[in-house]
Amino acid sequence: MIDSERLARGAVIAAPAARAGRGFWRESWEELRSNRAGMGAAIVLCLLVAIALAAPAISGLVTHYGPTQQDLAHAFASPGRRHWLGTDELGRDTLTRLVYGARVSLGVGFLTVAIALTVGAAVGLLAGYYVGTLDDVLMRVVDVVLSVPPVFLYILMSILFRPNAITLAVIIASIGWAGLARLVRSEVLSLRTRDFIVATRSLGASDARLILHHVLPNALPVMIVAASLSLGQVVLIEAALDFLGLGIQAPTPSWGDMLSNAQVYFVHSVWLVVLPGCLIFLTVLAANVLGNAIRDAFDPRLRRA
Image (cartoon, rainbow, N blue to C red; front, side):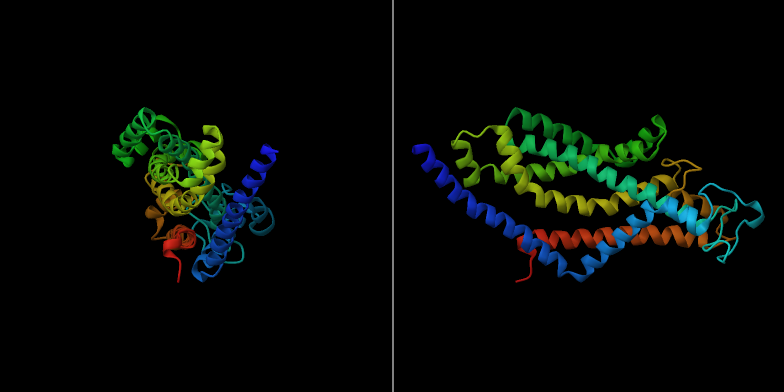
């Protein structure tokens, strides 16, 4: 009888919390949908991702050229029926290389954010929940990572490891996780003293259950905002490393590598500079606009009255 009463009281207490949780996510989604700029940016990003995923189909059915296929007789060709967006110095089809470059640039961006968010969230959750020795040790590691100039670490790791899409994502995420860890830790520090956490702990819930079922879901909005704002920065870093010759190596196409080659041949074809540069700009702009919209939607203090 006592157990039944406890379960009933727990259900009564949990029901408003569940409804409040669903209300928060529904309200946040409605706020995001009402942001026209944010939804436009989301559509642009989804379109770019769809084009990247459909690169083999576009190559086989539309351009009929491979990303590394050369046609020296038509080098620096202007946009036309044979090559919709022209060719580069080796006669490679620019449109084909752009769509395959999207696979690399966007793939590195999303993979980097996923790795950094996973590591940063794990470190932030542990450091914020277990205040004391573990928190001190983890935060000193974070301080060391943040104190290293990112450019030098990118250069060093790019020299030690020949970058491909996966290793380049790991290289960029090796620094990006630290800032996310500090952000998640600050959120967890405020959550661990909330009444519902204290009440759940007093009922005998284990630390693992508290972290995974109560702290993590309430820290998700901050993590989503941080991840969305990081995407544009990661794409820009990847393009910069490719431009400096420290990222994806030829003949694999990427937007930054295409820009690096174009700085020598831009007098022959301005399209070699304009097209990859515009795609990088558009991707970073869309990611930042969407990130700001998500931040406005998930932060109650920034919502419209």
